[in-house]
Image 1 (tube, rainbow, N blue to C red):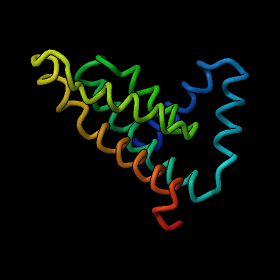
Image 2: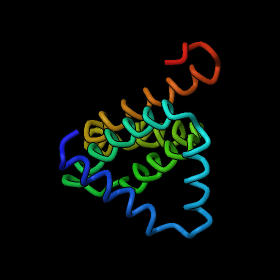
Image 3: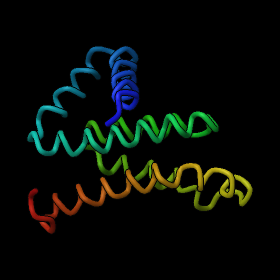
Amino acid sequence: MTEDNKSRVKEMLQKLEESYPEYLRQKFLASWFSVDRNERKRRLNVITSLIVELERIKKESIFSTGLGEQCVEAIIMGSWDEVEDIISLLSFKGEDEALRARYEPLWKDFVSTATAAAAWARAQANGTLAKS
């Protein structure tokens, strides 16, 4: 991870810390530390990728970036149902064709990364994926 990316991740985590009431910060921490170290590392890698991608998206548009931030938060919490719900919104399926043509390509890598993370978590939870 480059120093610039590390800085972005640190900035996003600080933003999360500053923008949430104490009880939610405690909920984030409890959720984060309730999983084993390998899972935290895996989530951190996904979160880092998504934050970098989100910053790229913000350079072009702020449309739906709140959903992107919610997706990152859901991954921190391990709320995979919420991640999948957000992914479905960010796929822009069923939206106006012009809107879809504009934003679907912009969000493609973010959605792909989040989808892979959610699928991996589901497979792990269902016992269909060996522990790494």
